[in-house]
Length: 459
Image 1 (cartoon, one colour):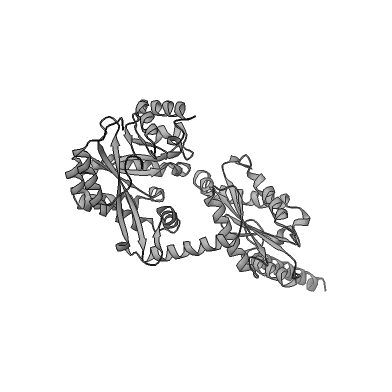
Image 2: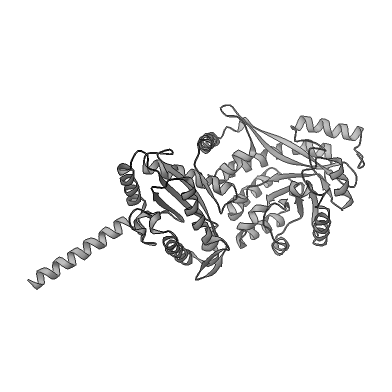
């Protein structure tokens, strides 16, 4: 009898262990997506017609930083720590059953919380703010204070969906909106967001078709501050889709980057610039520089480097004529591999520019590590130089010059801005006041007009 009782106990323990493994995430011990979805669907089926159920979709921002700098084992420990802090942050009134049943790790560094009987958006706002408070001054973990934050999307039954999958999908869409607005915040799902998500899906689908005949190249002149003459151009991609109409680069480039479609676009730009290079060199001289924007997502892999090197070698291009521009915001994800790849580009003969400087988070110490030739001052600084930004500009230009950087000012829209930039020692000028982006044929006319009627720096 004792043996039978012991066998039954062992069987019960084994069953419970198997059940736990099947229902929970092995790392955080939270319910997995399948069980979480069943739980939410059950809550929805039992809900009254007037009852509101909120679903919060949480994604940890910059979590890749933890894995890259501390290792994946450390990343797993941080996820467990966050899961515990998340459970302790929520009150019993915020959940339906036990804490572990209503918080779920959906995938990777993504979590979800279900809030039953949330009588208003303000109640969900309170919960979201309590979660964000965990990251108010960085996330405290056994590895110290980590520079990670959270982005949260919120969807509400019945307005935003009548099933777990609908709520999860729409809360996920709202979460990505929170990320695009600067991270470390929350966003509610809305019809406007739904329309935006649908357009993004259509843009992605059209990008995958690779209809490069729908793309065209525009060139924006760059003016030498000393002579007032065009010294180079920036190549800018334009897309007139047969299905979507004009699609702004601000729309399609982030989608291409996030979906891994950027390699084809960047190589199309490079090849188109090489096609136009003979005419540009003939009109602007052999020393002219053509700037090409490259995706920061390319910089963590050697594949793009070898593709560019092979293409320029095969087509016999002098790389000294090409400037590769990277945006300042990539600095937050700078790694030794990225720096190494930038050095490879520099050693191969390309010039490197840091674009939009002043709009991101690059520190002075980081800037000194980058193998950069040119600093492009962001339009946000140019906009304020005639008021409270003059002293900042003067100090910034002086620092860049001492580090050996050439300085370009972007976003010039007023004569007064141009005047102050020249007085403060900026080397190159760019903006709509001087010239707008234009097709190659129009650019050649602009160049010829400048030769006949040179632009004075006093203009």
